[in-house]
Length: 192
Image (tube, rainbow, N blue to C red):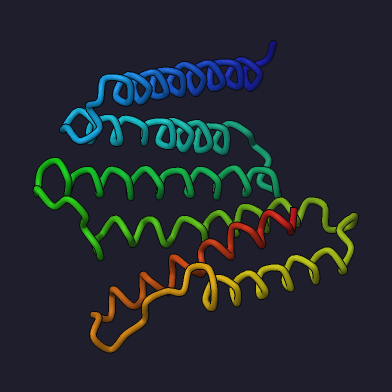
């Protein structure tokens, strides 16, 4: 078994154990009724460890992988997405646990959460570059139409972001960005 295969096995084991531990903690919190206690807020922070560990695994694989083509770029950008999600969750938890702000919006956490779908879309774009020769132009057109259609639906019916002159610039910006990010995820999924 070569070094990269050993790394894959260790990475899988770490993610699996961490995932089961977080699930067990959340189930315990639900069954004991401790959903509005500081323990619950710490559990939210701990669940972000899955994303931090995933990011570290992606960055390590990127460094060890050697290949700097589409797969490595996709792994790098997936790692960046995971890191951004972890940073957003950790920042949110910091506001909850240490600053005493129950629902910090807008905040620095939102910056990380808004950047995450962009890095995810870059990751998907990297994967599409690998299969460029087998990807038909019609698939790209369909993904683009799906993205635009979903963006329109999100803005007009589903998410209807609250944009108002009474809100601050940042509240308007994040309201718009969160609605758009849902469309990015779905459009990227259709692109694959």
